[in-house]
Amino acid sequence: MSRRAEFVFVCGSGGLAAFGVLLVNLAREEVRAMPALAAFLVLAVAFGLLIVALRAWAPDATPLLIPTASILAAVGLVTIYRLDEDLASLHSWWLLLSATMSALWLYAVSEKGLGHRGGGWWPLVTLAAGLVAIPSLGSGSDLIWVAWESGPAVVLNPGEIVKLVTVALFATLLSERQAFFSAGGRYTASLHPARVTTVWPSLVLLGLVLIGVAIRDSGTSMIVLGMFCVMAYMATDRAAYLVGGLGAGLLWLVAGPWLSGGLQTRITVWTDPWNQPEGPGNRLAEGLYGLGAGSLSGTGPGLGDPGLIPESTTGLVFAAVGEELGLAGTVVVLAAYALMVVIGFGIALRARQVFHKLLAGGISLLLGGQTAVSVAGVVGLLPGTAMPIPFLSYGLSLTMAGFVILAVLARVSHEERV
Image (cartoon, rainbow, N blue to C red; front, side, top):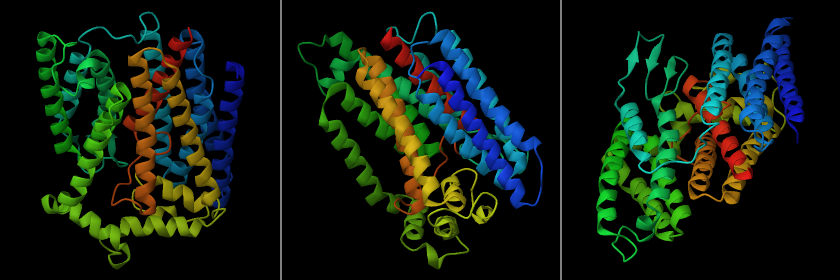
C-alpha cells in the first residue's frame, strides 16, 4: 500500500465519521452539515499530517497502521459526539495536537534514529519518577488539570504517559543488561563483577518508581508489571519471568481483598452487580444493559441511550459503542485493535536489534493488553477493570499515547527496513 492509498483510506475514515455525525443529528431531528464537515476535516488533517511526516522522515514504515487507527478514531469521535458535543470539540483539538506532536517527534529522531546509547535508561527513570511525583492540579469540579484518573473533567492523566515511558525504560534496560537478566540476576563468568554492581542501583530506582506508580494507581502498576515480565521473557527466553508475573497476579487476586477494601468491593460487585443497582454495581450493570440493548446490529447512531452508562466517554466507551452499533460494530472495533497489535508484533519479530524488538513488542503488548483488560471489564470477565483505550476514548493524554504508539511503531518499522 502506498502513501497515497493510505491517505485515501484516511479520507474514507473521515467520511465514515462525517456520516456517523450526520446520522446522530438526523436522529435528533436536526439537519446540520457543519459538525459532519468538521469531523471529516479533523480526521483527514490529523492523520494526513502523520502520513506527510512519515513520507518525509520514515518513508519505509509499514503503511497499515495509519488507516487502521483512523477507523478507530472515527468510531470514537462519533461516539463522543453522540454523548457530548462539547467534549467532541475538545477531542478534535486533542487529535490535531497529538498528530502535530507525533510529527515533530518523527522529525526529531529522523537523523539519529531510535538506537539508544549506554546509560540511556537514566533519563527515562528520571522522567517516570517526575511523572509519578506530579500532584493533582484542579480548579474545582468542572476542570481538573492533572489527575491519575480518567474522566471528562480531567485534562492530563500522567498514568497514560508513564506506561509509554516504562515500555521505553524496560526496552533500554533489558537490551543493555540482557546478560544479567538472562542469568537471573546471578554472577556468571560472562558477567564482570563491576558490571553486576552497576545493575542493582538501576533496579532499585526502577523498583521505587513502580512503588510510586502502585500508590498512585494500582491498575497502572499491574499493567506495568505485566509488561516487564513479558518483555523480560522476550529478551531472555526465560519462562521464569512469565511464571513469576502470573504468580504475582494470582497472589494479588487472593491477598488483595484482605489488604484493600476497594478491591474487595470490586470483586463483590463483579460477582453480583444486579443487587447493587444504585451503588458501585451501577457501573457494570448499566454497561451490560447497554450491550444487551445493542443486540446484533445495534440501535443505530443517536437512537440508543448510552448516556445512561457511567463513564461512557472514557472507561465504558466500548459499552456505548456496543449499544448503538451492536455486536457487528464491536467486532469491527476489536478486529481493528487486533490488526494493530498483530502489525506491531510483526514489526518486533522482524527487528534485528534487540532494543527495536523489545520496544515494538512492548508497545504492541501495551495496546493489546489495555484493550483486552478494558473490554474484559466492560463485559464482566474481570472485576472493575474497565479503562480508557487509545483512539476510542476521550482524553488528551490517551490520544497523545495513541499517536505516540503509531509514531514509534512506524519509526521502528522504517529503521529495520533501511
